[in-house]
Length: 225
Image 1 (cartoon, helix red, strand yellow):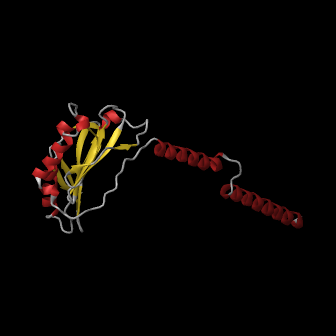
Image 2: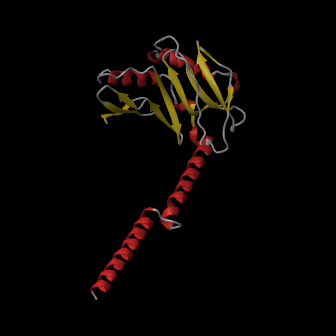
Image 3: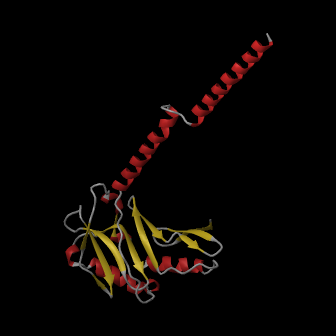
């Protein structure tokens, strides 16, 4: 009787160990379960979304090599002269000029801008102002997914001399922040037919500030982040 009882206890112990081992194995090495398949499905969705964003976004860039400092951003007369020269381009004679996407002003006396084509509103051209002269137009590649109409602002609403105001105010604020550097360029970005001036941050060695301007270049906000 004692031997049968011992044999029964041994069998239960062996059977119990096998069940425990099986349970642990299934927990850490699932096979053909929903839990195992879910991460793969999520990964596929994320990849597709990323590709869609890259495919439907066009980035417009320009290259600029910084020339000698000429204090162009502090000279309202020179900025105004550049604006009048742009308005006088013969291809826009008698026509309203629309700036596309934005316009960059540099302290070395150069300006980069994209304009809506004077004849075909679906075309965009790049222009560069250097040494007091505007360049010939260069075609800019535009995607059918670019919403041109929402990124246009009439030149009549943008005054180049306001770039001097933005640069002056920015540099005054930067001088108050330890380690912050003065701006050597300022620019306008256009979204939803609205003008936004940049830079929008003043970075110091110990602090960072948000700075914002209204369409006319007046200080609208300056506060520590």
